[in-house]
Image 1 (cartoon, helix red, strand yellow):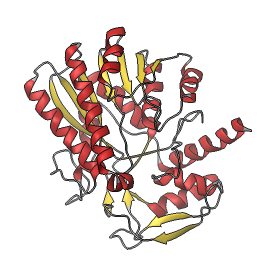
Image 2 (image 1 turned 30 degrees about the vertical axis):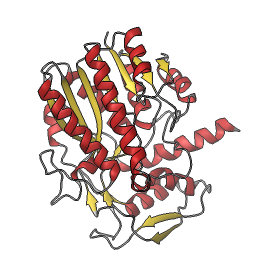
Image 3 (image 1 turned 135 degrees about the vertical axis):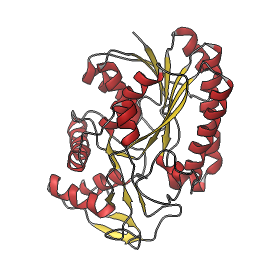
Length: 337
């Protein structure tokens, strides 16, 4: 049975991936510093899968502590989620992003080398494509970035390229995510960021739930069908399953490969708002405000390569994503009463 180290394993995407790993009978070891996640998620993972992963509350940048995890567990592969991820915050606090996102990856790679662990799956992002020249976006498109968050992902991709050239034993898969939303159908885990949400779906959910008065829609003068930004939204459970496909592949080759994880369909901000209102029978009042710096008109994937090489295809539609996101919030309110 393979033992998988999942960094940031109690976060939004990490926790859903841990569910899929545990259900597929992998042994899971999680490290998470709880900076944007909650220890309660550990109980939820056990509730969903009837298995409790081993957990270390440590920062992936702390080499001494990461080494202890490798010493105590024979790790076969690492899935690296731990990192800051808010585009807006990265623009105002670039040093925080460069320090954390680069340092955690360098630390992991160094410790992996010491302990002869050769399989690495990295959470990258569609932000590495910058403003794409055409759509849909293929993996071999030119890379550039429009914000420091994206730049950290691109820098890490470059680092991984160099490391894989230098170390012929390494197998690396870089997964470029489009926009993960939704929640586990059980309603037990989902996206619950600390503070005011940076991402669209948690924001919609809080407005629907009357926690926030109105949704701010950043710009309605983009070159899209309704003027609002278009993105490729993928259900987080689909995304998690993509990591299992990557894991099956990463142990069977040497070198580095890149895959888009998206649906290949683009939906605008207002498409998402309207679908959310319809499937959940709630109102989401919104107001149009200025564009955010670094945002682009439209971005959606060509998912062909992941389908042909990994056997990965997104199954859930936008209605499922909207329904599951709201279900998670409603379930959590009930449990807090």
